[in-house]
Image 1 (cartoon, rainbow, N blue to C red):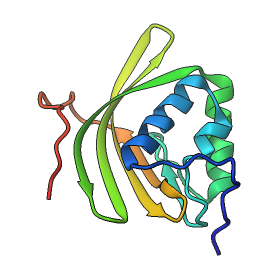
Image 2 (image 1 turned 90 degrees about the horizontal axis):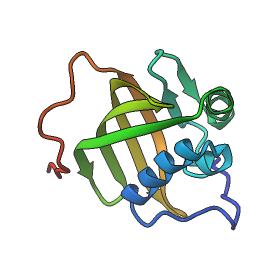
Image 3 (image 1 turned 60 degrees about the vertical axis):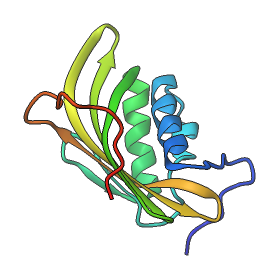
Image 4 (image 1 turned 90 degrees about the vertical axis):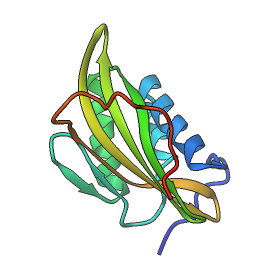
Amino acid sequence: MPMTPPTSSPQFASPEDAEAAFYDAVAQGNLDALMAIWSEEEEVICTHPTGQQLVGLAAIRESWRQVLETTRLQILGSRIAQWHSMLLAVHQVVENLQVGQEVTGPLQATNVYARGAHGWRLVCRHCSAAADAAPAETENRVLH
């Protein structure tokens, strides 16, 4: 059964707000803010570019704790496609990682958000190395 987020938990009015908060939390190295974006559902999933799939908040928190305590990074993303319904949103993003002055990538990320009683929350993130450079067209598009 899902846990009710604490009253101090942020409420995201849109999946775009939740996504912006995700990237901001990573850039700030703020694990609590990062975890506040995730849904409280037991079956949340995060797959890192290494291929490691994590299920559940405890595993996801521990993984991100390790990343953030060892590396100060910023994820530079360009959304290339998005699909929205009343309760679910899927964003396909091309990402580059910036650590200090070094930029690596590109990576392909899929971020899935669900709308619940407490606003939009991240329920699944899958990120992997991209085979080629980012597509030339990186403007936001809504596909129906």
